Image (tube, rainbow, N blue to C red; front, top):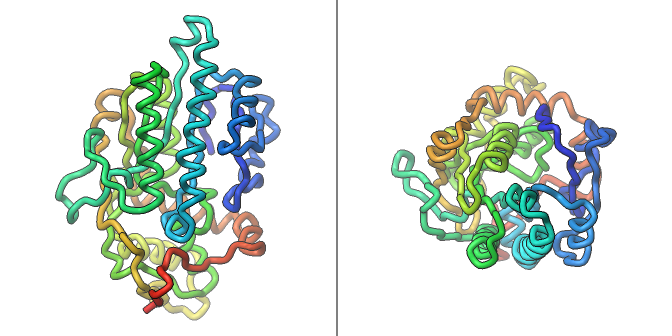
Length: 339
């Protein structure tokens, strides 16, 4: 990641199945960076870390985030996304109350959430999510994130904690764990395996390059108004099938199949995800007009960079696939079978 805001950073992570210290190799020697293996569901551990580090800003990005996993095991999503958020809020509130007036006025708690809390939109062109769109979550994942959003706003309204909330569209880019759609497609192509597409591939998502998201979060935490919500989108709506075909086309150019056949020939349609929302789309007008942020990457440039990164960092993803994790489907009801 090429963004350096000049701050001292303490990174908390419990290193679950998706945690990978190899992703931090470029910054682990930086004297302004520290790592703490801390589980946010452990209230005592979180409280101790906050008391010792005494942060000026808490950026809460920790979450269980894979919808399919939430269908199979919702309990961990409640623990991490709801209880973990409560623990961070309580520790941050106690810390904020201990600060001198000037420091307390500058303190911020940034809660990073998702567009999935808003539910499902109609077909492309029929509206977008705004900061005032009513919540309508449809999966255990989105319901747990909606719960955490409500907690954060309650701690602002009840206790005065200076919070900021962001709701972003689907992220993609380097270092993304290979259970998400983009790396799954790339790695399936590289391994010569079938590329699964849910249903008919008609579900629409707005795609946000991860470094654009990071720049947005820094903008919000430094310029945003306490108590406000900011939607962050990439202005890149595509159906899942369009996205998969785009990735296949890039790989046809950069890493053709040994058979000489297009990668698209490997696309297979599988049973849809239960409760699969049709469309998500973010209206990012507020953050653009009030804070001056806009995405720098478009659909073509961001995905080309992403494919190139996975091609250049084979050892990173091979170490994951050589362990316990496999590129296997999750989130099917027991009675459902792949078509």
